[in-house]
Image 1 (cartoon, rainbow, N blue to C red):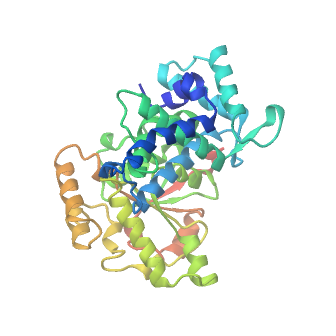
Image 2: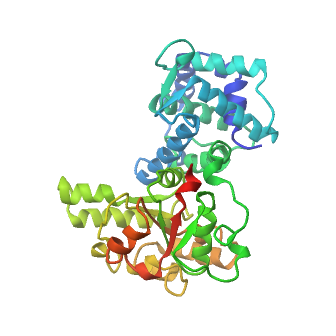
Image 3: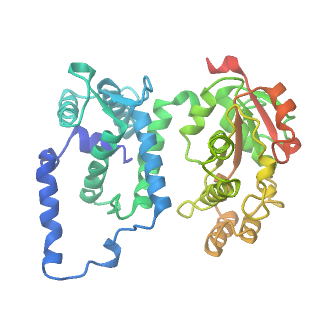
Length: 396
């Protein structure tokens, strides 16, 4: 079953070992890990923490942030409320049982309540809440405990294999919860000129194109199918950025860059370009997979064309035409390793599950008038972009 078992089996129906106080658990863990050291034995290489896996730690942190936001799905106030957590557990239960109407049993509710009371909470009574940081500290050991106890799960730990640990949580738990708890931004809308599945569209739409908010993912996929990157205009609605903040992307925040380089002067343009290059590399190789590159403009007219660089941030990125942008070009620009290039070439000849996940999507809070007036010279290949104008009425 899905790893939402994490919330169902480990939290709702904890084992006797899991029900012991945290201190006892830590003591037991310490006792188990001491003998090898006491006898002077060297730990096997596989057990050595990957201290230099900075990207892996960032990936794990990103996944944990998403899980926190799932648990904070109701009011999205930055804290996880007691009622919200119960609702998340119930959502996880329904994912596991595949029954959208199943409710938590009395026994399960008691188990959740007992676990909740043991956590570092703020507030009192039924208005107790948990900060994201506290939740992460509590839930990671639970996931590790589940992985160690489960016969068919990989034996991973967050400290030693952060990259694999985060990827496992995303694919087996977080993605399902996002689909259930945020259906307004992930569910597919009925096929239409703007929102049909890419496979169903035989001729390219005419851009600019006004789209329903719920049709946005399909519209982006259609644009990519016809060799175009997407510029999404949010028409003043914050749901667009909220949607992308919940996706597994590698992000470049141009408003942040603007503040760091021009206002605070805490970074040079060259340093900002290096950061952009890192984001591009991450999108092209995230544990062997690809993910979209999200370029967030917010409400700025950031001159991204001034940051183009032959290898660090090439113009070819802004074309989805595979004769222009492909693994060979990425290798030539030194944006992927030879190993990842070979990995992607094989993928393109078989399932295409990896390469097809790569895309470049630019978002702006403005409308079409703003884009035509201020972004034509600011964005690379502006005239070739698929401009998707979100219908503000669809965001209500």
